[in-house]
Image 1 (tube, helix red, strand yellow):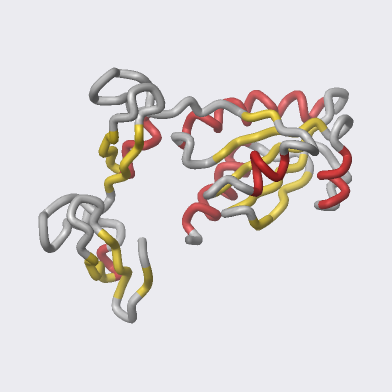
Image 2 (tube, rainbow, N blue to C red):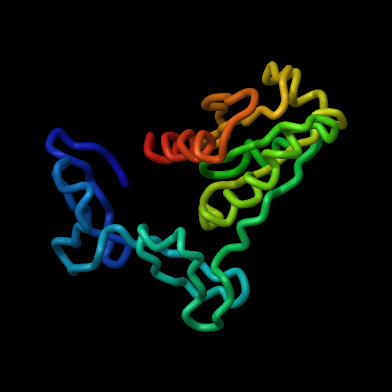
Length: 185
């Protein structure tokens, strides 16, 4: 979405480039471009394997889409392991939302929540980076963000720290925070 107008949201069509003013009450519908008729809720995802650009409806991005040409998955959805040294490159340079799980190997709650983090990663189609950092080996990041408890979840958007969720959290709690960050564009 490009910008907000007084009556709605301006959405640029990915097919023809036209700007469309969508009234706020119609944002939950599937709006069409007023010039070429294309759906305005489509995303273009480039295949990692063959480079083909695929159009994927925004509501289907969580269904793990495949490339229409080569059949490869359009995203991997892996959890990235980061360190103090790779933090800026992997987290702060990512152009979008990031979930960073701060954990300790000897913390029972951390060991319980890590499989949930692994389940969350593929759901977001690579549009959200999901990462983890071991607190015992990487104390600089913990002190930088005031992390004293594990597990803790740091949420970033476009390189900026948005919020932190500390202590035992459920998979639903984490996803609720992610959804809020994605919605607040």
